[in-house]
Image (cartoon, chains in turn blue, orange):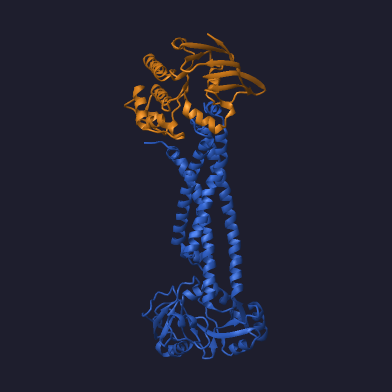
Length: 400
Length: 221
């Protein structure tokens, strides 16, 4: 049996249990807040990147009165429909700075007995020109979709091989896209334009809720911009050349999200900084109290041969243990809350949301843990140094 | 063995400067059993802490076994205390979170020690009559028992010098006699030097040499 500094520190922490818990909790709040904020930021950033990569389009051309709806659809996944003449596509193709175009038609799945699932966005794409879904098809299925086949977004409650009915037409799920965090894609069903047209025309006879969309209508023209041009430039050229359309630049949508997030982050960050300073001060004051309370004990330890570094180390060890514990608890609690309320977060922020990659997640945990650890260490540094500098006799006398 | 030359220690109380120890010189041989007597506030405890290297004198030197305590580094002084000196304080000097056994073993946490320290601590507790209380925490011991644990702790590191400040203050006469007998035994068998601060004249009379402190100034009794 031996007695060690670790053992003494452990007993000291147990001695004032509630005080130890209070210190650990204050660190937990700081660590949990920081971890949660940064994780949400990372998640949003990642899902926007992944979503726009899946979209594959630099610009989305929509009817001028549908610009806000289109932005809301891209950002928050609102299911909205709007239409314009298909001839717009040729005009867009001829516009300066445009490299490739592809039309899409948006149809909203409805309730009644027409559709298996309501409030989904059914997107008809043109396999001949598409650059959104076709690359995925080539890579994963290595074939085109048959006329009765569909692809579903990650959030659609159907798996590959299952069947779905929309407006009286039955489709087989040929594949399920990976999660992007963008509801515009995750909550959509993709089908070839021809299948969409057939579904529209047959809805009058096969469905109790017929679709009234003319044959020459499309919802949007997706544009890939010539690398020699900026997407924003190409968007201006399109709007100047074609009346009655608006060009939604993907980058601008992302940038507006980033601006929104920045404002949000800034305010939460301010709260976090205040919390951190408060935690630092509180822990500093508590450790000053601890050192004052234990002055005689510290003097005794020094009289028995404890070096200054040993006394310093003892106080720091206690601070480090509480900080580490608080950090782990805070990060775990933050993680559990983020996971439990991910839908609420997504709904209240109106932005895409996706868990970060494991490596990135590990980095966030490590950084948050390091900050938590440093909080306790920094707060206890001065009291620990002060206690170790005291003369043994002085410490014993003052502790009387 | 212990050479104290012209040590002075002053304290400031507001604008007043108070000399707790005033130009004291003292020579103590190896294996002496001596007492320092005097009234409260006469500077006995301050002198003891100066001898033990617990506080730095304003002037003068304390040399123990050829080592000038204040010419070595703080770490070296700590190691010196840990190896060669031990203390019995006048107050309850136990760590409340440690058992009686752990309190006795405490000095060994600050250095490297060979052998079975726990067995030695247990033996020392037996010597002070607390063999059946080794796992008790200080709160489970009476004031006198706590004092006896502190006395047992004073011998765990086989010190050359034990500096005891009112070591039997809380003890009944019988226990006081037992403890004093223990001091004599360590003194005669192991050659431990004892410097005991006390205002108990009877206790002081049992030591071979007495010195008196009056207002910080020393005189042989």
